[in-house]
Length: 262
Ligand SMILES: Cc1cc2nc3c(=O)[nH]c(=O)nc-3n(C[C@H](O)[C@H](O)[C@H](O)COP(=O)(O)OP(=O)(O)OC[C@H]3O[C@@H](n4cnc5c(N)ncnc54)[C@H](O)[C@@H]3O)c2cc1C
Ligand code: FES
Image (tube, rainbow, N blue to C red):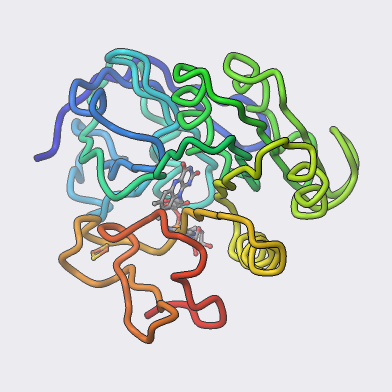
C-alpha cells in the first residue's frame, strides 16, 4: 500500500545530486538495498496522473521516521521531483525488493556514481552492528562525489576514486578492489551498486579471485512490485528474474552478464 509521506528536505548538494528527506513510518522497516517507488509530481498540480509511472529510488538512509534518498536529476521525472518543496506530501510505495544479505564476514562496500545510494544505509547497519567494513566510492569527477561526506558518519575507512583524479585516487573504482581486498585479515564480502560495466568488471574479478559479491542492479521499471515484467534480467541458468521483486540485489554468479533486458 502506498503511504503519503511529508517532505522534510529536498535540496541540491552539488553535481546534479539532490538529497530528499521524507517522514515515513513504512520505511522504518526497510533494509539496505531495498528501494521505494515514488510518485514525483505534485499532488496539487493540474495533471496529478502525469507522469503515470513511479520512479524507483534506493533507500539512502533511515533514521527513525526520517528516510533519505540520494538522486541524480537525469530526466523529466527526477527534475519534477527536484521541484518538490518541504512541507508538501509525497506518495511512496515501499520498502520494495530484496536487499543485501549481511553476513558475518567483514565487508567491502563499492558504489559507482549514484550507485553509492544504497551503500550509506548498508554502512549505517554495519556500523550499528559493530562490523569491520571499508567503503569505496568512485565517480567520473570529484563533483559527482558531492555526497561522500555523508559516509563519514559511519565509516572512517572511506576510499574515493575519480576517473580524472580531481578527488581521491585517479582511475576506475574497480582498479582498487584487489588491493583493498588484500588488506583484510579475513576475506570480505563485497557489496556493489553502480553502472553495468562496473558491476560486470567486478563479477569478472570475483570469479577470478573467488570473492563473494552481491550486486544491486538497475532496470527500467513500471509497476515495481513484480506484476508487469518490465524489469526482467537474464540469469545464468537460462531463466529470467524480475529486478523489482526478485532483486534488485543478486549474487553475482546468478546473473548472465552478457545479456540485458529479459
Ligand atoms: C532499484 C533501483 C534503484 C534506483 N535508485 C536510484 C537512486 O537511489 N538514485 C538515483 O538517482 N537513481 C536511482 N535509480 C535510477 C532512477 O530510477 C532513474 O534515474 C529515474 O527513474 C529516471 O527518471 P527520469 O524520469 O528522471 O528519467 P527518464 O526521462 O525516464 O530517463 C532519463 C535517463 O535515465 C535513464 N533511466 C531511466 N530510468 C532508469 C532506471 N530505472 N535505471 C537506469 N536508468 C534509467 C534513461 O534511460 C535515460 O537515459 C534507481 C533505479 C532502480 C531500478
Ligand atoms: S517493474 Fe513490473 S515486474 Fe518489475
